[in-house]
Image (cartoon, rainbow, N blue to C red):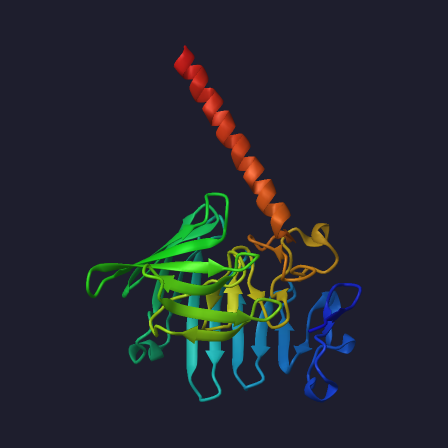
Length: 301
């Protein structure tokens, strides 16, 4: 698949044939400040601060979003095409990390899905999530990485722990999950910008919330949470403006030049995967050496 871009790095075409490109992003579908007004049949509306406040999907679903004074998403109202309405509330800590999400409408009484999820963080990485069903604990490939290695699920029903492993691609995106015996639990296929096109659950109850590195997928909105911002994989852009404004470039919604060897683990700025990984490793190595040196000095006294 080939892509074409305008000078502000907005995707103009994904190379599909003309007869299948109804509603595809064109130059006249980009509003002021590089805000997408329509893409692939999806319509968008923003508030004066550049936050996405309304999205109408091609299937007729309407999504409304509300933000706090820090431009953090705190409420999502989803009106589905079957007449159902879902309302979700989100809460954050002072560092901008999401602490919980909760479904608050009356439909939660009939749903078997968790209505409330609590999140626990290790710095800027997701460590655990809790629901009424149990809790998931995540282990990463090493302490300076955002690549998930394993998931430990404690089931509140049978009081047992279950171990699953992630198998990632060249930029740390989970492609498969297996149990401790090597049995396949889940596998997926992604678009060039991180949209999960195939979600095959060999084991129906498997939980795989990750998308691009350090992105947690919200099934209710279809938008992955990327720590400081929310991301839309359909258009390959963030739905909120860059926190540092024009210092980060003239396109405040830009994710990266491509999603195959670039990552943005914090929602603040993209970089080449290998470069970022090596840079973080050096920082942690220097920190370790400094601690070792200080310990040696103390022991020699």
